[in-house]
Amino acid sequence: MPPSAALTGTNTSVAVSAIAGSLGATSVTDNRGGTAGWVVSGASTVFTGAGLSISSSVTYSPLTIVKTGIATVTPAAANTTIDTEVALLSATAVIGNNTASWAPGLTVNMPAGSLAGDYAGTVTTSIA
Image (cartoon, rainbow, N blue to C red; front, side, top):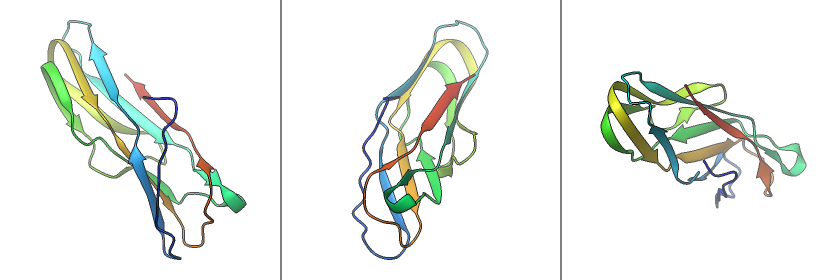
């Protein structure tokens, strides 16, 4: 996953705002040549910014997955909340080497009354 990503939101209403964008190209390459599956997990911190505003939740969507090799690759549901660590993508029924690539979408949900400005948070992913 890229070290940073720009998300843009144009909703300036007083209602809850969702700021969305792509995290960029993400991939798993499994060259172990065996039958063990793998799981990509992820979690997000809150996003903080202008005037001490903080995000109310962060969601992740794996979107389109391209795979090679023999494996059943299953994504989490679209808009999976990642405020705590959750499985985002898993491979089962693996035979030999395989890869999976995708460009996940991220949505940062902000509560009503949040101020416009720059926000920062951390999305951490791991594979096991």
